[in-house]
Image (cartoon, rainbow, N blue to C red):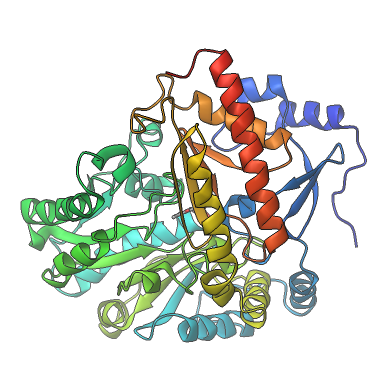
Length: 464
Ligand SMILES: *Cc1c(COP(=O)(O)O)cnc(C)c1O
């Protein structure tokens, strides 16, 4: 057995990377000048880079490594599956045991009204599937005018055409002339950045009513679905005010449109429930899943389908002309099953709810006293620190939005920890296996990072 391990000097790898590898969401020109960071090994919550530095993975890879890195049981399950049936498709009246077992397992784990799953290889593909599925559903139900999908500014639903279009990232829309027609964006429930002139409770209701206004303006007879993340991840861990989801739920209950929960981050224990929808008491008609489904060991996503949607999609008959070569891939399904075994056997969901979640939240929110921090927030194991130029006037952003965040991210790396910057919010989403000791280390490193960033920003005239 062989892995692509590191037998080259860092500089040689950097040069080859710069010459041949185009990175996602990167300015390749400046990255090539600077040189990529090279990760060579990972174990538990720790990464090792090509110079031998140990780095605490505060982002669980990209929000996905729920069970921590290097779990032999998943590697073994994939190896065994590949030795028996490495690949077969699920088209043409065919299935295979791993796909069946995973579909059944997910139906058991999901809320009771979600009993079927469509498999794909990523969160983006899940949302592309959603896009076609909700429109097809309404066609099948004899309401072909219901085509518009409502989503939110600064939501993230992936990087494919439908994912980018459903998402509300303007910097993504400007490349590729998106969104595609038929997507309508409403405001996000971002109290700290956009709603602070009201109480969070008032703002939550107002942001929810943006949905009501949009449906009523477009016409309920033209709206197919509303899609949203329970908590926005890539948008900056935007935790909606407590009034937001109850008001959205009221609006949806009164109107005949589908609700799609994008659970790609919030699913599989991140919020201390199996799904973020359960955390907020939502009853989605469809759920997009990926990331934590396999803890990132292999790429896999899916769409969980409710009994209600099954009526249009399945009971009415006819082909759904959609699918991927790797839908239900046996090795990926085996990885997912082994990953779910670990989550269950180690009680990781309960652990986030009752143990490491509250433990880290208390300490993370304690960072709110730092002079650079305007707000510290966290639910489950996803958190953000808003860094600001003037703590006494905390909602006023930096003049060069994003520059202090990137600086802070680099300082964090130098101190041996991954935090991600979204604008000037510092984001964490650590593996669910994080120990108390590692949580203490995470918070201490974050504080040191804030101290150093504060000094650098002061020296360079960024602070008010
Ligand atoms: C990451 C993400 C996606 C896209 O998933 P990919 O696997 O990167 O395609 C979609 N929705 C949300 C909420 C995500 O965080």
